[in-house]
Length: 311
Image 1 (cartoon, one colour):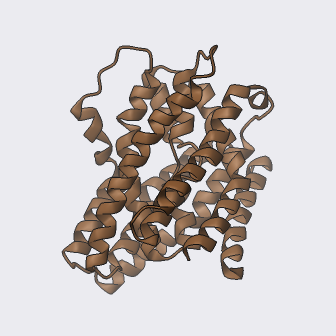
Image 2: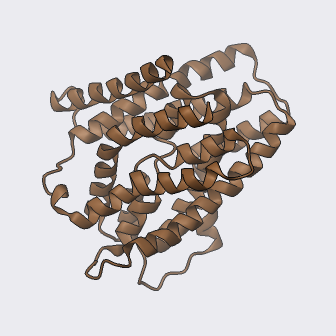
């Protein structure tokens, strides 16, 4: 447990470094987009590939992979419906569409990957990566429907498969194929990829710190509807996910991976999607910032619970 707590504290020290760097202008707001690009296009794909191709294939891997895909898909379908019910009591809610996304989406790649890698085993990290495939499907299908809630908008087959064209998804599919085909990388390229991937953990947490440093929370804390949706995202949804998964007839690895994927804040990509759909980008950006702020407290608490239950 001491090792786990040390790993958790290290992650949040990285966030503090990013926050201080932003406030002192060592990393100004403009630097964040370049850091995010480096993270999403280079270090995170390397982390995914190095972790997956180094695994040993077994019958257990086949079973847990398929179960994780099924349960992560079910998670987004059920939570999307639950979000509608949670917002139903709110009568005067002009931005209901944005709040639906804030409640449902999770940042399981940007924040989830490094935390899963730092705190849990490679087996858990692998399953969190697999669960992230369904997050991508959600973002470009159900999330688009949520953003256009109340409008007439068709979701096409093309829009559902569009997320599979991003580099993180492509690297995931290639790596899983290599795993099941028993294709191993030579030592030298593997070491280069592994070293680049190791930079993901401190880099991603520094980016979170920069984002928090550049956020203005004064107006956000007066928006009680957004606070309600954010608390649903970081407290209620993970609690319900844990309750359901704990009683499922699957391995502890699958239970842990699905529950772990649910504890992270609203996905950053939702801001870009809202902009593309012509929706309230300011509000959803505030939702990302607020849920991220809340998870500075909730993530350590959830991690301690998950470690005690499943490890």
